[in-house]
Image (tube, rainbow, N blue to C red):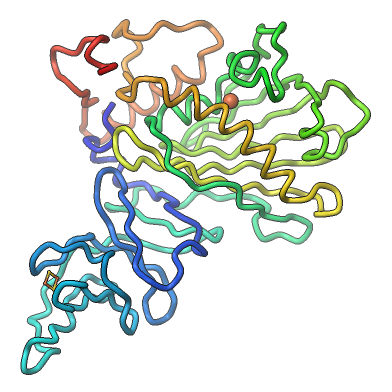
Length: 350
Ligand code: FES
Ligand SMILES: [Fe+2]
């Protein structure tokens, strides 16, 4: 599937960066192949416009923000939050622009994140329990672009079969490749996967979860897939700690994906310093990143195509594909692949 070619994916909200990363000036971002410019209006509210000036196509993100409007760096035309051109400095009456528009997108702030929807939203921004509640802290962990498809990252979040290999150096048992069993519960916009996974309690995990006595821990997972590509996973430990990872997986284009992750915890800095929590999750996600960047980016949704083989524990990945295929079909679309109809595995790795 090529996310940039599937129109219904433009109708979901995506968390493209923490609000704190936006700062003062305009910032570029590419969402589903669409170049956008992000900035704050006069009230500090986020704005998303097409990153292309209507005059001579210069990227507006190279400009600056003036009174809550974005001013083009080339000839200074200014555009407001609706994308309306409100000023052309060269005119005798600079405000008499004719009020034409460039495309503006839905844009808002939630959970300290900047959210954009390129189309007409078909669902709300997902609900994240405990965010902002007393007794819970939020730790921002990473926001970076990986060279892999969004679907590869989200599928990996529900893959119980890779721990002994990809995470051999962190929490996996190299000599215990049998995957922990899992159960799936469908939801309106995804599913919930329950599973209990034994993990090695290494020194750095000990610091991150504050359990010193045991060599092995049972990690109880409740992972919720948030269509199309994001995940909220609650990791519960025997000491009562809940480590809720929220990973916003944002398709930049067909080959590149933003990995934007924070964690919610019901403990304190004295229990586990944020730096140790971040270091642990960075280590684990870097292991995932390294392997995912070796995979093919044009992921087939149709599991009967024979391009990829499956085993019984791959059920979540198969369900992901089935539900995404249904989403496309429900909106009158079919799966678009890279080279239709003559696709070959050899070409896909080129
Ligand atoms: S290109 Fe933007 S004002 Fe001329
Ligand atoms: Fe992993």
